[in-house]
View: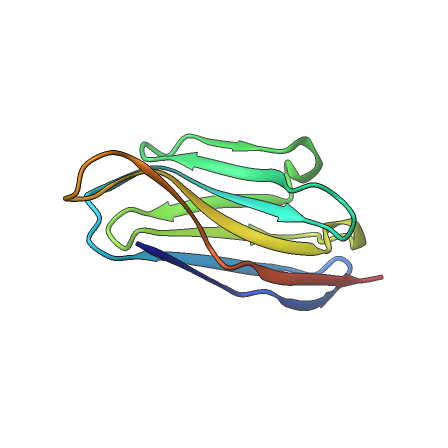
Length: 120
């Protein structure tokens, strides 16, 4: 299983970006898909997560500005980021937790990260 993230880039404060992350491989289902971010000198933090049933949760710092969604048929998760601030600058990582494959178990996978830079 591999996760491929895309959509990062440079944007001015107040602008928008949409991140995508597609999981590839033979996958039966994925319990939770999420986005994390890591700013320079800081720990990785959870930005948003969404369950297979569509229940979403957000970090307080992004509530009302970011929207997470998923397409279960495509094993893809999206993060729509609006009203971006300079403090949103970070490398964004997608995560798939509870990935069920023909080989059994439920594994956890990370994408390679995509850089989001918000200029003020």
